[in-house]
Image 1 (cartoon, rainbow, N blue to C red):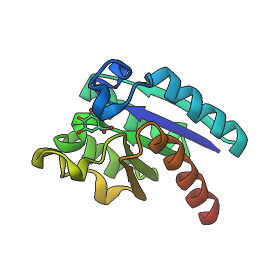
Image 2 (cartoon, protein in one colour; image 1 turned 135 degrees about the vertical axis):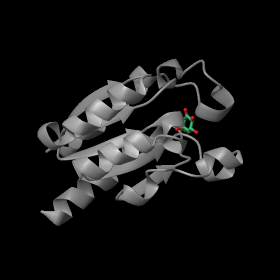
Image 3 (cartoon, rainbow, N blue to C red; image 1 turned 90 degrees about the vertical axis):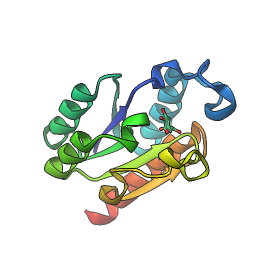
Image 4 (cartoon, protein in one colour; image 1 turned 120 degrees about the vertical axis):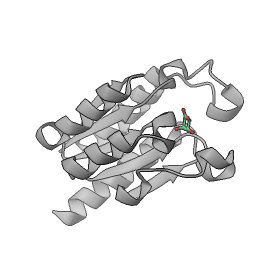
Length: 146
Ligand code: DQA
């Protein structure tokens, strides 16, 4: 089973970016923890990060060829990108939306996700653990679906 992890803008700054909100772990450390759990679960993970909306759209467009499911932290594009939503509608690849912070406990403009209704489910607010929890939930979902 192949799982793609797509990370949006500014997540490359994790570790130093607003640590009170996002914690002190770097994206590379989160990738490492996710890869370890993936290997225990017997699934392959392809990890991506981009600051560019069009690149994120192209990664989503590629999902039907490259992955059985995806974990997506679209960061700020979560709240704004109809292009990302349209790409997910076209790709039809099952995905779990993940966030480090609880977006529903934040500013009003962050409480709405333009992609949440397309997701299998959401994991939001568990810091770096959101990725591992999201991976476990996604793999369980895909295996149950057969
Ligand atoms: C985030 C939440 C978004 O609102 C924000 O723009 C991010 C990170 C999170 O993981 O908590 O960049 O997706």
